[in-house]
Image (cartoon, rainbow, N blue to C red; front, side):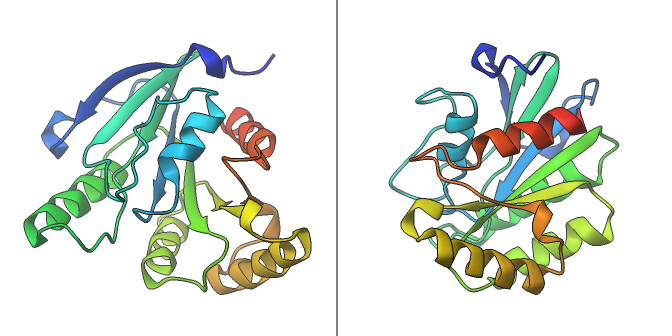
Length: 193
């Protein structure tokens, strides 16, 4: 009796904290750096080609987008840390993400996306540190795993888990190309909701 992911529908896109709707349903949010492959992963989870807009240019998601499937809200947060945006725009994103996390919501699970191929990035360390300090339930989806051998994936996962100070069980190597880790992510979502 899982979630009917394929029945997902887009609800709305919000550009300012004031627009955010009241939290009335369980919420699963996705957060990560601009070029981490967030839209691709979301599309893979819901088995849709263009539910979340994928682009060759990072930083496409500039608002908070809400989707719903089986009475659960899935929240796509703007990617952080992208260079080619004005300071004002970056500040607006930061405020938007901050307002989302600091408002009274049903934060059932935060899926923090990190590129498995990279050393720990300052912004990811900051984000995961924040999630830990604030006590949010979260997992780390390690994206682009198909670019590494299984052995290298394990090595990177151990290194990143240690750097972020989290249990390796909370890290899931994923690939929106091969579908690796998607079922595991879905299990985490179902347990959380």
